[in-house]
Every structure is written in structure tokens, then in C-alpha cells.
Length: 423
Length: 140
Image (cartoon, each protein chain N blue to C red):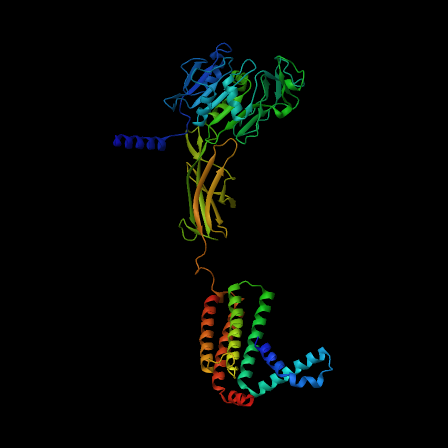
């Protein structure tokens, strides 16, 4: 029993050591044949690895079996079916992302899966498929009810590095919460607004977003680096015009791109080379960071000039840039040398590298910083100011000695005489 | 303290002279008592070598203490322990020396009757040595 446990542990450790990024696993695509056949999405589905496509509502769909997550990536296509499957609801979707799974959710004006919308609401993307985006200044003449977005500006170049001439958009827009983990990709045009297509633009109640407060493509990266992307129009993945855009979004969401990790961290006292510090010492902190390259299918050095190291006790006493000092074929070494503050206590070396579009790195090492020992202060005579006081103290002793000597030998006579006189 | 005691003693001795100058104002009386005290003190000094010696040493300590204080005010108190050490050595030595002065000059044995001058001097030397021992460690 114990042996098998140990073996299992070793096996797990080995699996950890040899594991690449979490991109190798299967992808589950959930689609609604009543809205679009799977073949409509051929372009998109072909770009995915190891796909398993299932019709929505099927009882085969389970994200977890015996508590083990079955898929790395999940694609939910537009659907009018209320429930994804008997085993999958909002709760399961949240669990799935909390466990590190990635989610690519698509809605369209034809339909938005209710659980998916609820889940997006949990994340801070408030979308509602009943509301449709209109822009009377930029209508697509070739396609009724579509908004033409010329030369769209993608807000995050890490998530979407490629560019598109124009987008013909037909779908809803989302309001965003102020969550800092949201990564807005595409804003609605300034002259656009969203209203309930069933009611019409009758009043403020029927308007969901107005102007560029609405978003058309939004990504999200959780603290555990799980990624979610929401797309408001399935034409963007159907139409081969937008292949590059779809590919960018999918490869980012499914952790092919923008994946970095810290390989190792270390710190030492510059003078002693030990990992112990006293106030005003100089510390050297090193962190190695790798980036996943899906083209080369390997880890490559990560290039950046904004990696910062903090030295924290409640507040950061130091926040310095870590510079690239060396790099090999797999990783880059970032080094920061700084002075420990004149303050003793428990400090934390912290690299909290959170950039929208890149995996989060949060490395913390707690170290004690001691105060000076009583023999580490400079002696008095090394400080010129104190020479005055030292001289005076010595002078007091010398004069005192002279005084005592003279006092003893000054004899009793005057005293006795004095006493006699007074008597 | 010691000087005040002395004055009190002198003033106490003064009354026999007072009646002849009863008409004088309070201020004049006061200035006269001071000059009388001063004269008495001068007389004591000229008659008593030990008193001269002790008072000269006390004056030296006061001067040195004031000098250090002025230096500290002007230059800053950076090695504060050194300043405290130097300053306290003058103050402490002053206090001890005043004690010696009281005990040695208490000729009539009114207050320190049981303490012989030799004992007083021995106490003084021991206390001074301890003071300087402690202060030199404190100066570091």
C-alpha cells in the first residue's frame, strides 16, 4: 500500500517534471446542430488539436469524471438550448476554469447558451444575446443588420498580433466589470449602440450598451492562468476572411501563445554570498523566465524589460527593474541588485509579473533582515565629532588626578588653622 | 547648592550688624548681604587652600561642560552617546566634587560628623573611578 503510494507520488513528480504546457490535452467542442452544422465551422475546428465535437444537450458531456478534469480546452458555440448537458451547468463551468481549464465561448444574435452567459457574468463580461449591435453610420451594405468596423484596432497585441482590414459584425456587445483580469480585445465603434431587437430602440431601458462602452471580443485570464475568451459573433470563426483573427484568439486562449513561466528564483547577499541579510546590505535577486514557443514546440528565452523585483514588508521598500543578464536556449536570467533598507524584520522578495496577455508570475521568498550587532557600529574614535567629547572626558580624568594629588598634599594645616580660627 | 548653604550660614551670622542699617531699603539690604557674603567667601578662599583648590576644579568642570554643550548645539549631536559620556563626566564629577566639598569643609561636624575627612576623600576617589569607568564604556 505504502509502496504504491510512493510510486504514485514519484510518477506524479515525473509527470510534473516532463510536462510541457497544458496544451496537449483534448479539446471539447459543443455545438448546436439546429443553429449551425458542425461543417459550417470546419475552418475553425480544423485549426484545433485533438477535437471531440459533441451536440449540445447530450448526456455524454461531462467536464469532470471522478473529480478529474477531462478536457484542457472547451469551445461552446452559439446555441438556443438552455442546458449544456445534465452534468454541466454554470457551477461546473466555474469549477472547470478554477481547475485550470480554458474556455472559448461564442455567442451570436441567433443564440447564446444560457449557462455560458451566466458564466461570463461571473467573470465580469455582461452579455445579452437579445440585444443587438447597431451602428447607423457604419452599416454593412452587403449584409443587412451588420456593423462594418473598418481597420479594427485590437487592444491587446499579445492576444491578437495580426490585423484585419475590416470586420462585418453582427451580434451583441458586452458590458465589462472593472475586473483587472479582463483583457478587452475589440471595442464597439463610437457611433454604435445595442438595443433589444425585439422591442426596438424605444427607451433607455431597451439599450444595453451605447458607444464604445460596449465590447465585441473580450478575453479573461484567471489568477490560476486559465483563460477565457468571449466572441459576440460566430461569423468571425466561420468566415475564412477572419482566419488569422480566429487563430490568434484560439491559440492564445488554449495556451499556445503568451505562456511564460518562472524556471527558478534565487537570492544572495552580494558581499557574503549567503542567503542572510542585515540592514543596508546589498542583495542580488535572480529569476529565470521561459516562454513557450508553439512553433518550435519548446521553451525559449523570454524577452522583457519590465520585470520588477520588490522587497516588501507590508509596503515595498524597494521596487527595482530586473535586467537581463544572460540567456541560454531555454530561459532568460533577470537580475536585480539593490540595497536592503535600513529596517530590520521579515521581508519578502516578490516578483509579481502580471501583464495582460501573458501568464501571471508570482514568486515570493520570505527572508529575515537582522539589525546590526552591537560590535558592528563604528567605534567612537572613528567619528571625528566625538573627539571633542573624548578629549573632554580624558581631560576631566587628568585634571581630576592632578586635583586629588594636590588635594592630598595640600596638607591639613590651613584646614586646622581655619578650624581654630572659627572656634 | 553648596554656595547657597554658605550664603545661608553667612546671612544667619549677619543680624548683629543689621540694626545700624535698619533704615536702608530692602534692595540695599540685599546687595549688602551679597557683598558681605562675597567678602566672607573671599576671606574663606584666602584662608583655606583646599577650598580654593576645590572651587577651581568645579569652575573648570562647569566651563568644560558648557563648552561641550555649545559644541553639541552648534555641530549636532551625532555620536550622541559620546556627547552624553563627555557631558555626564563633567556633570558627575561636579556632583561628586561638591559632595567632597561639603564633607571636607564641614569643620564643626554638624551634618557629616560621623564621616572623617579621610573617609570622605576615599569615597570620593572610589566614586570618581567608578564614574569614569562606566562613562568610558558608554562612550564606546
